[in-house]
Image (cartoon, rainbow, N blue to C red; front, side, top):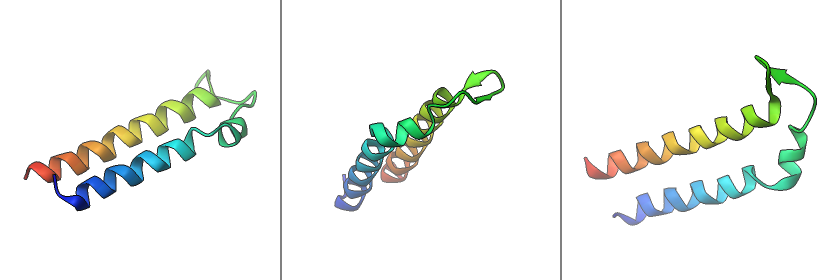
Length: 64
């Protein structure tokens, strides 16, 4: 794997650690809901999905 792709994945990992840090999670721990789903779950799973898509994009470009 090229060093540039490794760096992108490391940066993504650091951003994920920051996104799932407790002070940031507490911002979304409210009584609000989106479509009947609590806001914290929407935040958690949307960040998780975005990270999967970004890593998929980085890995896919590596194999091309």
